[in-house]
Length: 383
Image (cartoon, rainbow, N blue to C red; front, side, top):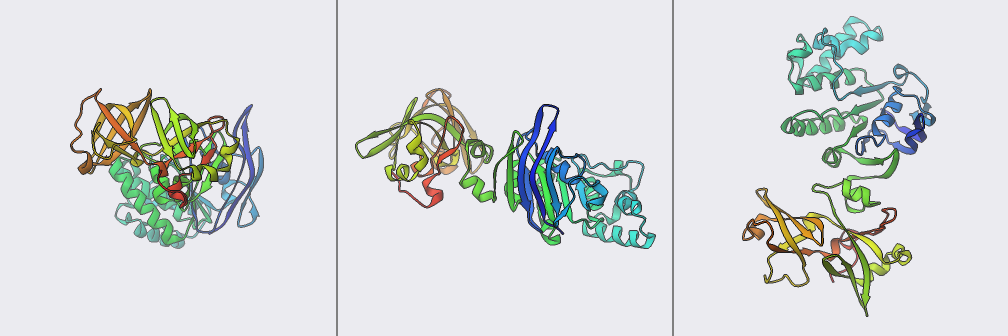
């Protein structure tokens, strides 16, 4: 397998910059995810690595070999597309064997390789069928088999399981991760699904508007997001973000916004150097799982944020709450056994307890993270 090094890569379609000076390296045997919303440039980046799109500038190297302007067949990469790309008039065997026939391999070598791949993917019993006779999971395995049979240096996958139903998609996530680990295959995988990335990737490269927002491990992008976009893109449900201002009263520090006032650790704020350049206006970020839920007058509700209940969703082990805080919808998740006494009733008052050690602060002008949560950085104390 091979290392992939991308340097100052860019692609323009007329006046539109689809990819702008992207730099990253995929190590030998690494599972990298290109993640982002539709139109962010992730698929264009993958297609340039594959040789299906020619760059407007920059360099692509595989195992130190410059492949920037080589044809796909000269790069020794294998690719799986979202819609499989199988030939309906050919059998499963012939579909898998196609890239080997193009390379004029012997019949014996072709049969040996196809049989080995089919056994690995558990599709040996459908080799005589046509693609139209396969289930979605079987068709996906055939497409993967056609990629594997080439023994490529790099595997490229463009949202290969996004159209499958939820149950099959979950099973395929496990299979693909196991296969990648077993083969020690250098793999670049494009997705807009952060759950896929968080559960499968060694590292995630998050893109927006053709640029890299953060490139790190799944844990790092979740715990220590580089900016508000990353923080709200990673996590389900998404992180809550509220406008507020930093205020002080003597040695005490508060985050104050419409309908809320939260005390935070002043030492935590003091360690965040970027805040010293702020004019006091910040955006507070906190994930739903770090917000407790209580009723007015309930023990331990002191200092909680008042909200108007909008909905309650019962999710088995958890309850999900949506409430209006000063005109902003705030989502909270709490254990079902802790909140079973809180029933439905749109419009009733409710209290949200924000964990001050789980709060992030973002710059309202450019979205930069000004202060990482104290709990994930191992700093600070509860206010």
